[in-house]
Length: 99
Image (cartoon, rainbow, N blue to C red; front, side):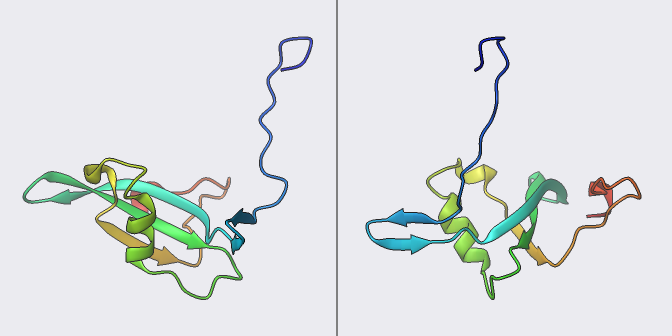
């Protein structure tokens, strides 16, 4: 917060995370989470994930394992799709209703 009361959010200067001498590079560039109809539960959590350009591969299990200790089990997406790009409007907003 500066002297005028304005808050500034500052991200990581670099995305590399060093954990016990192991270099970890985040794989996800962008994600959109939405609901999908389900006969048993009414709705299910879904996620479409755009990976970073240098990431060759990521699996559904990698995402669910990463989220397991960060979210309640019912908040973890049941359906995950890896995509190259999102469907956008001409003004640059993601068209979630088309996901």
